[in-house]
Image (cartoon, rainbow over all chains, first blue to last red; front, side, top):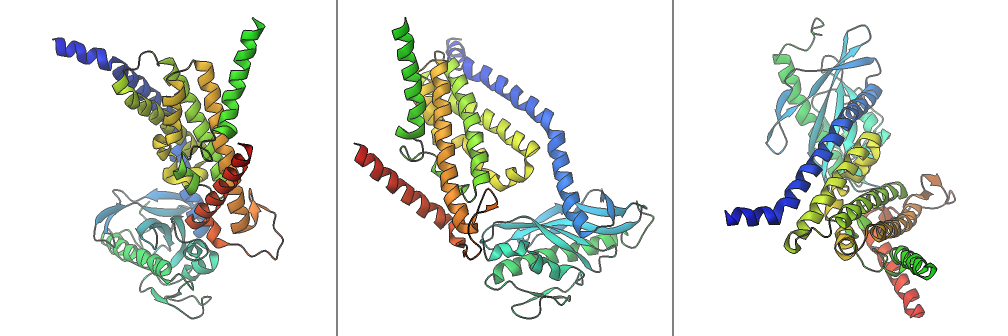
Amino acid sequence: MLKIKHFIEQSWLLITASFFFGLLIAVTSAALSPRIEQNKINKRNRLVGALLPEAKDFVPVEGGIEIESIQGKKETVEVFRAVSAAGECVGWSFNAIGPGFADKIEVVVAVDKNFEKFAGFDVLASNETPGFGNQIKFDYFRDQFKGAPAEGLTLATSGDNTKIDSEIIAISGATISSEAVVDIISNAINQIKKQTQQKGLIGDDRQK
Amino acid sequence: MTGKSEAKTTAYRQTLLAGLWRENPVLRLLLGMCPTLAVTAAVKPAFTMGCCVIFVLVCSNIIVSLMRDLLKPHLRILMFTLTIATFVTIADLFLKAFVPAMSETLGPYVPLIIVNCIIICRAEACASKNRIVISIIDAVGMGIGFTVTLCILAGIRELLSTGKIFEMQLMPEAFVPWAAMSMPVGAFITLGLMLGLVNKVTNKEA
């Protein structure tokens, strides 16, 4: 009994404060979480909306799609079906993540409705070297993906980067960052394409 | 009576000024180096970081000062950390909700305010020993000192690495940006030179 009394004497402030602070955080979180969720959705819609201008709404594929990451880990990716104002499927978008030069690179990728051509990609999070690797965010590098075939991407260190084909020209001085982007995107797209085909989602306009 | 209140005002002014110059957390106490080096690539994130620190510092100093008589010596650090963590989480949620882009730029450095030595130092050195008014003034002084230093450092780095301050073009067209200034090396060099300059000035004063 004495021990319990001693324990309570010593720690009542800590216990009360924990409850009080916990409550404070819970209230703030409850008040702000709808806004935070909305921010995330807005961000995705803005980025993907720029890549797929016809898209009006994004419908998540139920249950997501499980893929194997570049490091060999299983992870679930949220895949979104982009739907136009008329209710037709105009494309797909998904996030892909993988190792870059300095830190992880997370990109959002948009493809056309049959997973045949890229509509483009955008960088969600990266920490590549300013002046070199962070040019993966620049238009001249990203534009190479717009309209490029979705499968069989390769990287070349020199060539014409205005030509749209499966050959992506690396950023000079940042081959590793360029390679990382190509690897991350092709790793994800191959597996996602296969699985969406298996689920019978591609080329089926009745799915809404 | 007037003498007493005058002494009080002087004490308040002294506390406020201590944080700004004499005991400036970054330049004189060398505390909070992690955010100082990490978020000063541009003025905007540095300023946001400073505001978060001011908010957390003021709130935690108020709470610690209120419960200073109840603190058990061996549990006090735990109580400080609990208080600080609460307000940092709240600040982080607010950033995520209202300035999502800035929240992404700052990344892990907002949650890292929890282990920022400035705040725990002020809780230990000031708030746990002083009345609430002095604690608040101390928090504001220290917070502003931290923010101003960060903004100066960030200003120098942003100007040299992009030619802009607050995203406004200041340098002439012919200026070649120094990419190194926005990388960690730029932070170390600029901070080192600033500390050297401050030491030189204070040596002359003394």
